[in-house]
Image (cartoon, rainbow, N blue to C red; front, side):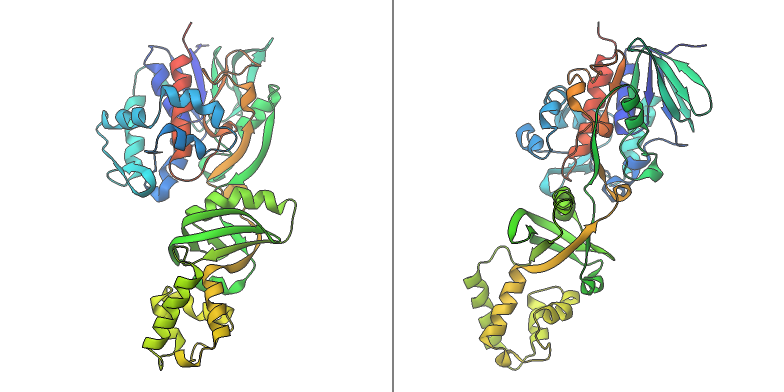
Length: 414
């Protein structure tokens, strides 16, 4: 039976980058993908646009990662955002930088990102097997020998790369197979949690706000009377609660808080650029200019139309009251609510709905310079299967590409 120079399990961003880089060394590479096509999660990332990286410098970039940041320093020093951008642009895919440093293909199509890799994967040294799922890694005396699949096939190699992703979006093939393989080989799996996941809210009135998007708002996380987190940016409302960039970034903190405390709330600040006095002056100006106008119409200058009715109900104010009927006490309630509309957190969506899985193979058991296991010779890990996760903004995708590149570049170094 043919023996391969390396076997890569998983055809996502990390796996295909590993395959492309390692095949350049004239080695015989086998890529095994359980789906009938490659990179299904990549195709749906960034709402189908694929946020490939972020343009910020390495210091700021690493600050967006959780405890894994130190592990990634070597990968980013070898292959970072500038190298990734050059990689794509040399392949005739133009990129653009948007607000917050997010980098997208100029075409706004994730398929064009995949097309770059598919052209490179046509390298004669790469063989791809679709619809094949690996059951276990073949290991003897702590040395890799190959893989065994659910269809009772054996493929042999002394180098096996696990690039199976996390537990999020299982329909894309991320069902946690890599964690099981790693654990059977003796690796510690840091507990798996949903990261970058929408949040469920108890109050039903916000269901009427679904599909409403808010920009430049503040979001605070409260555990009882203690404020433990704050984010600024964009968010939106859903059938079950809240989502959007700042909610997703806060979701890991919310998940952790829910494990130890039931009284968890979030506060929305609709006017974070103003202080109490400035907002009070603005309201008084609006009221004095339009004394006979009802409060609902005046609020068109303060909030999106769709939010006004429920917001005024939240403030316990009759929406048909005219401006000159609003008391100072009611005005104070309005201001307080604009600064801190408090919602009760009932939970987060399950891990299958998360963009990223938090937790995974312990980074202390992986050589950051090669991605090789410190426990099993010839076993490598890349991408989300490792305990690495970050905020939204292209950081996680860059980590997948960087770890894949480093692994591919080091597989056959003596």
